[in-house]
Length: 357
Image 1: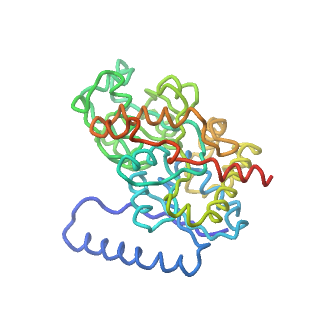
Image 2: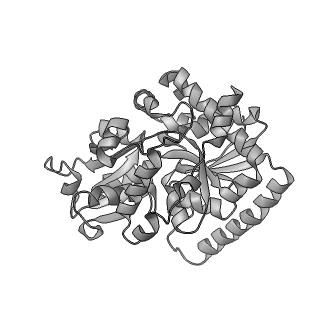
Image 3: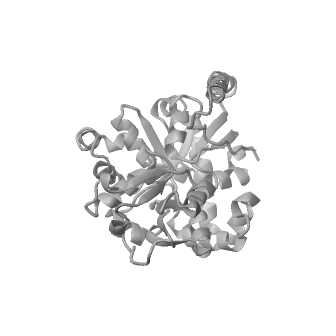
């Protein structure tokens, strides 16, 4: 079945000099050892997932649990990072061969002179919801009403921060009108909301549905359906995907084809089975104390997942527009002709899978 590993993000705070020194030594050891190991056996791959428990990234774990990587002759290790910005760092250092994260990072990285490319798109919506604590009065009913409040995101430079900036800017608010606080995802996000560190924030299922069900939060803005995503962002927003460094992709097209085939098989499986069957393949800790709520949230999410892994034609321009509007400092680099969207994704590998069918 392969290897399933959930690795925590590296600590950001400084707790004396021993902890960061130890973390640095471990990171250097991994960076040195991993390329050597992969050089010995190129079919052993490491993929960073921007939160393995997040429902939007479910195809990664499902592909492994179904044995689809193994069927392709690959040994894939999935490692979890709560924020996409941390996962992309592991890719750029060469520690990982791929990232399951948001497509918007491919555009953001190109603006910074880095070339990565999405080869399988999982969905056309972010799968995120802006939640507001029920401690706040019911009069807080729009993003504009969050002026002066502290908003939680997974990390600074993460997709949730891009979307938050854009949605607030659409309401005529600048970054000075609110505080954006990185609080991670899943349980760390819930803890921050419960403790009052944040008043609202953007997160995914299953934690979003759990907080709403518990009466701890209500949905202020929903980006979990295509209709609501089009209304809020002006078009489809391809989000969860598999992306790879372009240089690695060009050097290992056969491995990329195998990965694409495993993921497209997974997406087809998801469209051919119900939520209860799919949930049964997930690790028990993903469902935790409310398995029926997990199944319900998954059933609602299933229609948003792609059946073929292709990038929609109108998706990349929407993402570019959102990024340019959300980041004033990088706007000039994100606007044409500086960004070549054709270099941020390719349908070549998923099309090959369709031809093999």
